[in-house]
Length: 169
Length: 169
Image (cartoon, rainbow over all chains, first blue to last red; front, side):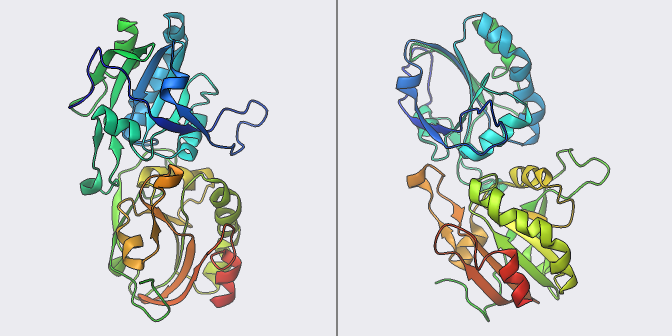
């Protein structure tokens, strides 16, 4: 049973490496982000990709958000975050490759704690991509309540893209 | 049961994205590498890291191989390869960050197929690093027979480093 509008976002612990303005390429210390703490009282745009550095993600999904992050924030998003099952070091490096700085939080759900709770995790073993891959989706979460959810059912970026989310903010 | 000197290397399918000299930043098509096919009749230096882009790996383990690749090859290594449980897209991006070109094959064991057969895979779940992480090790394989294996038992790079391998070639 996967997450739907009206649900409360699961409380999960994600990890990330905070942006270091002094030394952006440094491998900083990982931090934990507890969704119920970090997102309480905020409007959050959260998009998920099956994999950092993979073709669709890097060439279609992420760039849309990088380009439109300013608009998302001016339309009310307090936080824009990207999550994948890659670990926080990979997410940090991927974010750096787009120079996201602290505009987009690059979150890791390496144990698929959030993905499983959402019902949006797949097994990539058959494609030699390991047992944990998040689906491609985007959500708008308002004070921990899911007010928009768009899950891709085919390759490509439609309901999970920045434009689709902007239209719903 | 962990692999030891004298064992035949397990036959496993790893994945990688070949280096494209024309367009190094392109996200190329993944290929499969079957260890028994690719390594037959060759002397291979294979080192494994728990994670691409992670601190010890990026700052201590990988750089030494990148610096000493010429020496490894002139001492008889036909192939120098790096393997981790990250997928091939992440491995490709990580290799690019060191400009390894085709000097070091960046291999993915995302399903832990190879690591499991070697007895050198760990569960990173308690550290929120996902269920499949390879140990840190290096091997010299001669015509599919393991003639050297050095597995780190503590953080840091000793028996799995380029210097240790060079001494055994």
